[in-house]
Length: 92
View 1 (tube, rainbow, N blue to C red):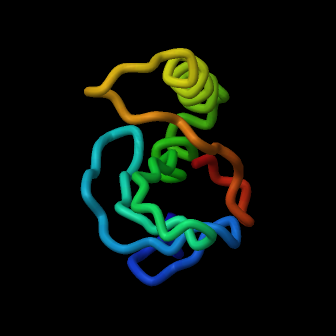
View 2 (view 1 turned 180 degrees about the vertical axis):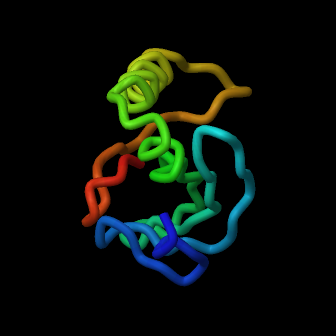
């Protein structure tokens, strides 16, 4: 994730504005969706964590989180609008 920093454009759709959270699982950025100018949050799986464990477990947990979030709808939760892989294969 070293290439991910404010000013980076990912997936040709999102302009990263600032880091708003960091944890053991990854980083969360405030970003702008370029097509709509909507402000969004983007969570990126930490490549460092993945390479330290050298297992698929982190990716599977990330996918479970995405699948659960996609099914939830509540005014106090974020809505999942997109997910994918960065050019280097990292998940967002």
